[in-house]
Length: 488
Image (cartoon, rainbow, N blue to C red; front, side, top):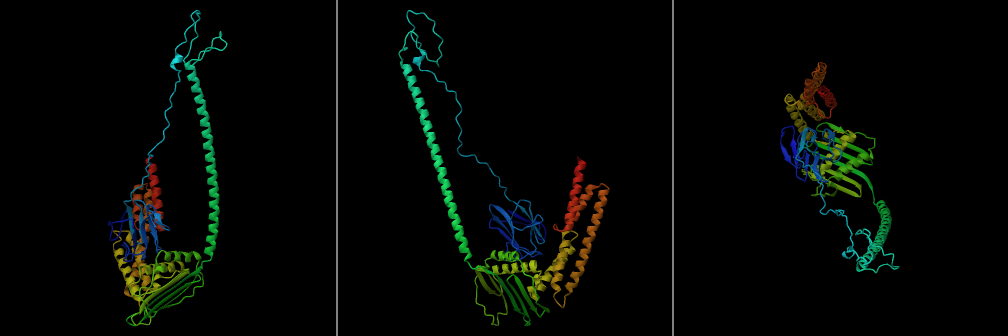
């Protein structure tokens, strides 16, 4: 299978996907690393499963789209499908179409062609009996399928000839064969009935055993201790200027508590959340954790929190059912640890509305904000050649502003990002209004071809999931129907 980049710096690039699959995300250990907006650390995976190519979302923040539709479960891929991950779009090619060929069986039973069997009497019967010497009676016409009746002059009839004996013997053989066939048929019917009875008896016995086993299994499962879901997450760091950053999160009994202490950036936050989380939300987070091997990972080295060198660490404790794990990492974390961190970040954003940047330090926030700002600047300056970059620049300006807003002393980029954000939105709104007026005017003038071209141009300025894009697409479909009706 071939994965082709449709836009961005790698537009036109093709990547062959083996049956081992292909992972996509921001981290370096992904098969395809995307350092663009809207992409999670481990975002999605293309894999070969159940004899077909599938796309599976790995619990990303912004989701994965297939042909404009969010992927909620593993979905089969076909040639020509378009995958949207953040700002990047891919097209699927090179999938071998599986054709079901009807294979003729190696042996086919064919009944023999019907043949008309003609039974004739032996040669001895074909020869007419010698006529009486004195009588000159005209013999009755004989058929080779009839036997001659005895003469009325004799009480007992003629003496049987050798041919008559042979014919009688054949008749006895035929009657004997019929009786044997009848006996065999009865025997086979009896055997089949006994087989059916045995199968029914076995099925009834097996069903009884399965029911007993299920009852025993349910009883044994009820004896397993099912602890409620619990999660504790802590991130601690001390900068060179001895500025402390501390973030703590506790999820227990479907309630969440967290606190943020960042003196350097002036952030001290400890909200009170009284609402309980739903069981469905907890189960979703649990499934995301089970997709990693975190619960089976072990501490790689002993870390003493009191040592001077251990000024930066992250700790994660998770327990549910009969499982429990407690890991503390520093510097470069485990891959499974990072995946669980991303799952927690997505969970907080979706269920609690917590900004993902809340748990990041000042250095990380500034770096991410600068990356978003630079990307937005490039996209805004190139939207005339690439119309889709206009709405992408709006998204990146928005994220950059959100990162910069947490600081008391905001950098110059924050002011520029806010001005460009408002300007880009105004340009996009003007394009929408002018395009709407132009399409309506062309339709009134019955210049449907030009109206169709204008709809196509406008669609390039908006994301496929937006309401504006869907409205323009519906208008385009209506115009196409009008054009096809005029042709008829």
